[in-house]
Image 1 (cartoon, rainbow, N blue to C red):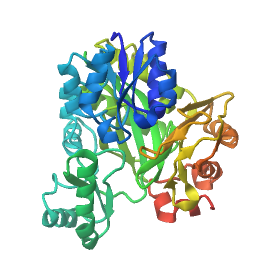
Image 2 (tube, rainbow, N blue to C red; image 1 turned 135 degrees about the vertical axis):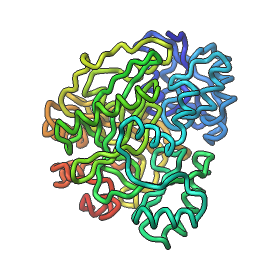
Image 3 (tube, helix red, strand yellow; image 1 turned 180 degrees about the vertical axis):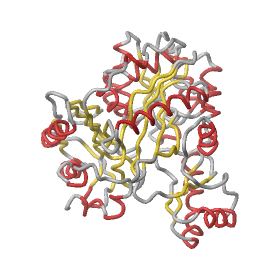
Image 4 (cartoon, one colour; image 1 turned 45 degrees about the vertical axis):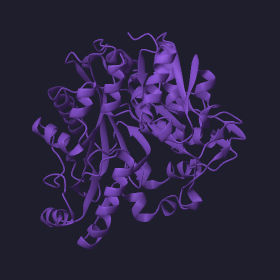
Length: 452
């Protein structure tokens, strides 16, 4: 086991990692930017170190600053959380070069899984069905037009190095391709430093389902069930739940089994999430793998009782998995609501400012992961995620009832949040009857969906 962890992230995930380290008896150092000097993670940390100004490029994405912070504080491991440098093979390699354990897949594994298009081909060879799409990375506009005409519109442009929905563009015609391809490339370059684009055939009424896996470097691997992430806005997840209410048990078991078999065969290691599209006939298609812990990992923790962050740390330390597939029990139903600093009445415009008051829900089956406290100043520089409300029940109906209660109790004073959106959606017929597709909110408008 590593002896001291540098947490190279911020917000609720920094607090979450800190708590896992405490449970393992590991001292932890929180790396923070000037904008996060008064953050909850810094307040709770055993030790904290400033790594630069507010701008992420000069702090949370500043590799030399993070490596130096680990060395100065005597940390022998770095946990990148999600986002920022969590899937950056060069950063993982820099950690290893400085005798630091990168808590995630080893650099060579990250490198092998870096190209989403190449990973689709690799895992398809290991038995996963994939969405039809481009034959390779599109080289230019004429190539994109030719391949899209062959595949048939609509298609979804995707950055090969991407994640989190950034740089994705839905294209329904050649004219849209002419305007969308340059924009997608520009966004991909800005977000990931790589403008490589491929596309997939767009499945109009699809659901987004993902399988959580955990593998060690000794060839052992388990899946921990699936999550349904179909409530999305502009390819960004808003609500996640598990197990998926849209799948029957035979399909569910086949999906989980194929997912873990394919990544074991491909030599993956660490925590990972395989993402799939589910069509109206119950067919599933692999789209990508995220080589890190996910924002929505608490859904799986509530269903299984497994601390995924702690297991991540053990596996990165070289230990064998403490879990065997037969020992993992998936019980009940869990739903996660992402509480963001955004105004639903103003097209979900991002918000910033002071938290004047805070009332967090509680009671049976309720968990809140957050970095908020009364008086905290939400900075304008980063992602708008403020908190995650995770609710568990013996059945989906029980989880929904607890969700209504918890959302009614949840109050953040001083700035606008999307809590009002969540309160409305848990009473919406489409959500209650599990008839949500990934494009529903974008097609009808989020305001219309919730009756706003």
